[in-house]
Image (cartoon, rainbow, N blue to C red; front, top):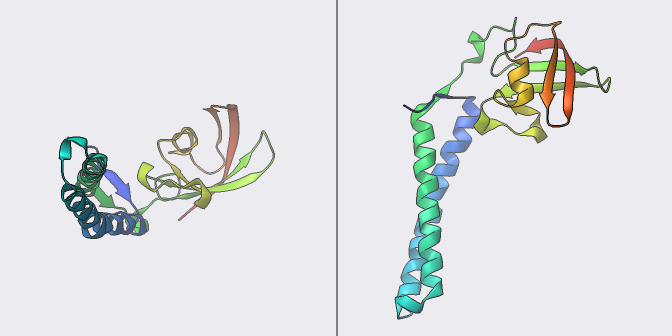
Length: 157
């Protein structure tokens, strides 16, 4: 059985929109490219046809993967989140004791992670290290650059 994936409503809507785009626009475009390449004659020596068929295979695999993801997706109701401990969808404000700087991260699923938006996966080293910890906790997390020491300053929605 596939693991349940948790999403914000916004994150799930992005995935649905991308799937709709792939099915409604990309699939017909590739089908048209295959038809045009087929019309050019001998398929055994037709690089355009081979490239279009390969693109179709990649597209269909991506569509299948996204449909599988949507089948196991669950939306998290932010009103039901307990902010006494860091959990998915919480914003966690931390102080990095190594650098003295503060940062705020939102803990999200792997599919919604986006460092530019300060959204980190609960399966990343830092996300997993913060998960389940309470305000005031100091955690040491092993990251590729070494060990980072973070103090949880605040947890909110």
